[in-house]
Image 1: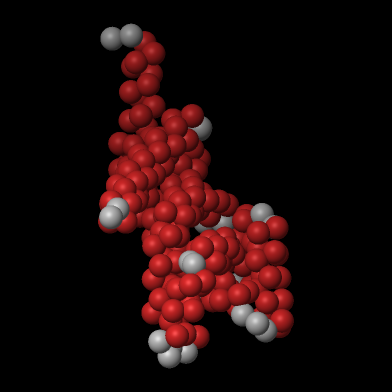
Image 2: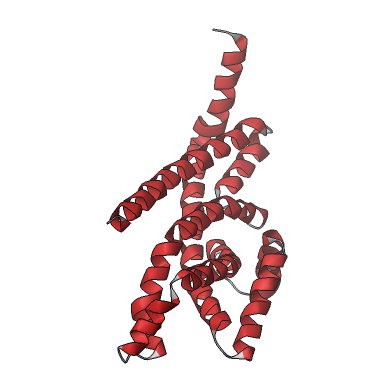
Length: 229
């Protein structure tokens, strides 16, 4: 057996097999997906609220949502995470994955707000007028007519935001070793091998994102088929 192969197998053994270190990567992947899922849910709630505020006739609501979107989109995600972890929740005994979910949810909310706003504006004004002509209130028209059509338009963009979030959660490793990056760092601290752990999590990220992207692509194609007359 070639020496380079023996060396590679030895490094893989040290990274995954010794002391059951593969469990760190499995746990890290679980936390990565958990943080992403809750961040998307929180971000969606915030995003819809901010989008509606920005489309409202109130100057105050527009100013609040506009400021939020501008500040969040204009500052680095890592800085936001550090502020939330070390300042806002510094004295609170909150699990790291919850802090990460809140940080990424707030960050994602700014981007989802613009996605939702664009989706609402993409719905033909005639749809709103039709609802009003049927005697529906502006709220009923928005909930029953506009939002369902807008959601269908923005679903691909929301899927893309989910994929982006999976990669962005890698910075959680800067405040806690619970995610994939944290698993790699723990292995590196024991083996002093930086290449294999980093390549390993890169492959894991790629496979997970590829699976999700394929699913989202099929979902989008199915939606386009449903639109055909």
